[in-house]
Image 1 (cartoon, rainbow, N blue to C red):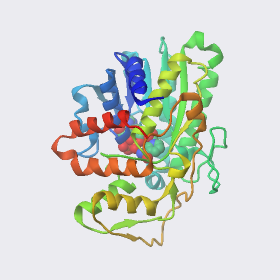
Image 2 (spheres, rainbow, N blue to C red):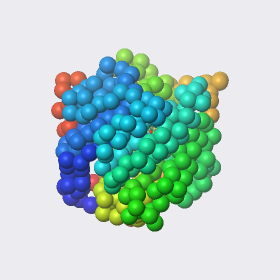
Image 3 (cartoon, rainbow, N blue to C red):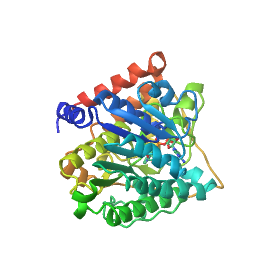
Image 4 (tube, helix red, strand yellow):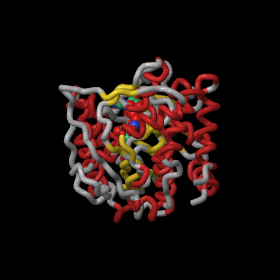
Length: 363
Ligand SMILES: NC(=O)c1ccc[n+]([C@@H]2O[C@H](COP(=O)([O-])OP(=O)(O)OC[C@H]3O[C@@H](n4cnc5c(N)ncnc54)[C@H](O)[C@@H]3O)[C@@H](O)[C@H]2O)c1
């Protein structure tokens, strides 16, 4: 699909539609709100307070255009009331505890927020008496990781070594159970809910300040002229710019409008296989885009287990949705480093200019 067609499809799908974004105070949620704003949607957000002053949520002044509710998805009553009061046409569920290393420190909370939080959402939607498309965000880490070179497909076995990955695999099981039990595609004409899950790889982009994530670590070191410390230089991840999976989620929503039964399914979103890079390669490209910098390998004696090799098969999204990655790894890293270099003068303008260049980008 050509970029301009995609832009028009998103506008015609989301203009004046009620869109609930959970996790709108986070990195991906804030970018999603900005794209939805540009498409003309009526947005409501539900999430915990942003953690830093320079979070995208604050920089983009999201509460100036979205109905921003600060609340916990574990507070089932409040969460349910906010959903039903809003009467959404679409729900993008991003609220989660998303960090692997933190999940070793707070495993029970991670399981609760990621799986029961998802169940709270789906349970509330049972009382929503209108058409609604739900796009529920899990991760590429939901697959049982065999540490092999073959990319994972949507019908591969679910698993999860660390608590984060396992909690998201649990979320997938919750989603599938609700889809079969309460929102069965065969009974769509009765309940009018279309439920999809999306599994994207590691995303990079401006405005991520999370602890223990590679790009924020790189940027903090480069800004201070310190060497970048890397934990697993050989780890291979499907890096992609944040706008890639977000466009995939939005395009999936558009396809669900066209055919709510067929697209009530799971989809992977990742880079082309040739763009899957090691941490080492990512750091080298980031330094070259920044203009200067050094790195060193951190030898950890008490490191927790993190997956080494993870590749995603994206053929289903390409063939069924007409989605494909628009930025190669180098361009994705360039977009990211440019954001951190230039955002301060006018974060809204710079972020919107990147969204516009992404939609006009031709490979
Ligand atoms: N960033 C990545 O590389 C990546 C990769 C794959 C999947 N994901 C998934 O995408 C989603 C968004 O990730 P992100 O990178 O923007 O994370 P983030 O940490 O920046 O944002 C998380 C959001 O969830 C909200 N949240 C957390 N616990 C909550 C609770 N109990 N109640 C209400 N809101 C709560 C936070 O307030 C925040 O708005 C997550 O579901 C994550 O698992 C992220």
